[in-house]
Each structure stands twice: as structure tokens, then as C-alpha cells.
Image (tube, rainbow, N blue to C red):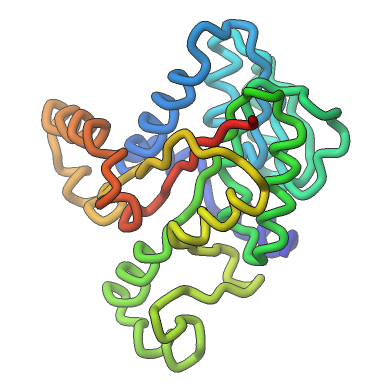
Length: 258
């Protein structure tokens, strides 16, 4: 799995994804909620687990926060370090944060790992580690890729639906079945709920991080700046609406350590 991820991210630029218009929606939304839970905490210590190339951690460090970043992929880590920020960047995995003592960070971001951990027990382990290193009363933000986005885009839009059903990549009720070679795992809200319950974390909010943005990339790219800003306003107004959550490409689970 690690080797396949290295190959994938050696070719895929996460920085560019989050600066394209559909990625900007996810980034702007996530940063809005990060700031909401960091208000009145100018000296907050933040851990960014699966930090990628540092899109979030570098920005937060530039804002004056004490940020530590963990990233598995050496290529991504190299880009992060090349940005010459104050981020303390370390190679490591979400499954083992033993270098950190309990109750160290005010906020922990887990924005990449759940995309690539396809076993339920590994997701639980990563979430437990994030909980352990977060202070009591602290906030944990966890990103997921949603099942229906994959079925609609890869399955139906990409005309792979019959093959996926026949090969067992989809269950009879259209839930994606991921294996290590697939790199990405896709969940439904009930899957996220089960993880939170098992780990013993209290949800504050579950939001649609990018809503319909990934379905309408070409439309967003064709918008003038004023219209795109209106779309951002619309999305930020509706991203907590429960009827939109499961269809979003990404969701952001905002949790508190009691």
C-alpha cells in the first residue's frame, strides 16, 4: 500500500487540486471551520496528520500557529519542507503517533488518511491515535470521500457500473468495496457514525466539504469571479444541510474529545 501511494503521489499534485476551483471550494470550506474552532486560541498547537504538501499546515503556520505535520509520502514531504515555513514536518503514518504524548494538541487534522485506509480496523486505529494526542476539549477534524460520489462519477458517468457490480467492486446495495490496489476508500454516513461511536468521539458537526463542486468542475471553471464567489456563498450557506451530506464528494467530520 505504501509503495502504491508513493507512485500515486509522485504523479498527482495535491497542491494543484486544492487551488483549482473545485478544490478551492473544499479548501475554503475546511479553513472556515478550522478557524471557527481556533478562534480565541492564538497559541493553539495543531497536528496535521497526512499533511500532503502542506496546503493547510503551511497556511496555518503562516498565521502564527504552532503546527506539526505528519506525512507518509516522501515526495509530498519534500514539497512541504521546500516551502520554508515554521511547520515541523515529519515522515510518519496516521496509524502510529507514538512519538507524541497524550493530550498534546489543541486541534488535530486528519484530512488524508481516511481516503487510503480501506480496513475498518485501520480507520479505528488512526482515529484512536488522533483522539489520544488531542487535548481533552480539543477538536479533531476528519475528512472522508463519499460512496455516492464514486458510484455516480466512476460507475455511471464513467460507464463502469456493470463491470463494478460483476467484479464485486460494488455490493448489491451499491457500496464500494475497496482493496489496497484501489488506493481510495469510499464511505457512507453510517460508516462514519460507526467509527465515531467505536472510538468514543462526540460529533460537533458533519459538513459537506465541497458539496456539488466535483460534479460541476467545468461549470465552475467557466464562471466569472463574481458568479464563483456567489457559488461559494451558496455552498457555505448549505454545507451543513443533512440532505446534501451523503452526495458530497468529501465530508468533514468535526469531533470533540470529551
